[in-house]
Length: 483
Image (cartoon, rainbow, N blue to C red; front, side):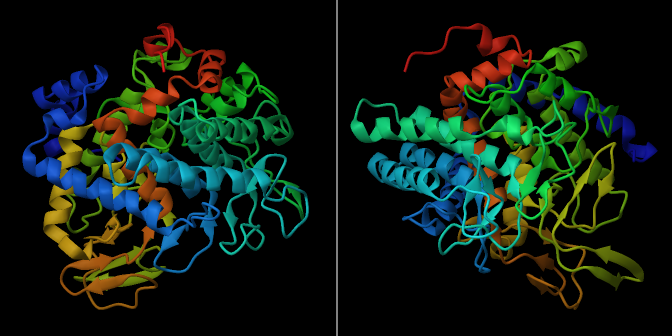
């Protein structure tokens, strides 16, 4: 899984420290607004992308319950994780002027009230959650468990992250804004992390009424940092520092198309927790020993994926320095198609990615993989987003911004399981997915203004979790900013 010899040195030089990359790192580390580096054309595009992506959550979430569809326009269940991103989206919309603060407050209160008052018990049907946790997917009609999905610890954590953020954002001394903070605090305190730590000190991935706790625990590097830190920081059912130590013991430090990094193949694992946690300049003992922080690790992962696309060992169509990005996403079909005399295997939904751990790649790219990494490497992400929009137009960029995925290799007539094939151009998804729309919106805003990061730095529970886990340095060592 290495670059072809003919371009290896050039790629390493590119990843090391080109002038524009160094400048981008300095600007981001200093907390400068991303807007400062944009040309007028780039700013217009970013405004449009961010606005359209925001409207996925505003237009499609149920105003009565706050339930957000997992995907659209295909009819689907509601996603608890998508609700966490939706909660985070509403203040962004208010700050950008797409909705008023009062509108954002009303939707936020409706969402928090629904999740606080919805049924919590161990019944196999008719409940929304149990012991403070929520089912992975919910019925959009009434918010109860969808079929036989699991009570999900990580999806609950993403919901809580959104709740804690709005609790910090709505900080004015009015009864309704104070109610946001009270509801967010109540939801967080109710979660029984110790019950979900059935094999201490690890955190179980879920529970089912029919079978009890799942036989799988979270461990190693992935999107679950936010879950571990919220569990450790809990004021009611906290887990200890050993929980974080258990997580990091399975890290894989290795080079992949560039400098060494903690590896995880799909880019969402390098993005989700960063949506709410400002990892710039703070590090746990593991990262201190490597001389970097998790923000730099995600930067390296982003650049290595781009370098992998340039090397293009699979010979897929379209890949290059401005068209790249593998993450969990939809795909065209499960099966093989012969293209230009070569048999190609394709998948539908899959956790695609490329790292030293494994490569899962069928030529399907996801714009969220690049867009969710904009704070890490804006100098390569922005050109990629602009080029994808320019090259594929309305096939890929439409009502709610970038559609979930596309595959330029599958450009011949075939029976796609979903999406559509444009002859000579490629396969394009016809759905937007909430858990991919979320990182696009939140990470663009963090890069532009630092809105979510700055508010979450004031969250005492997150700060406590970070400190118990051994994080030091940067903003953690400074007094919190006044509200």
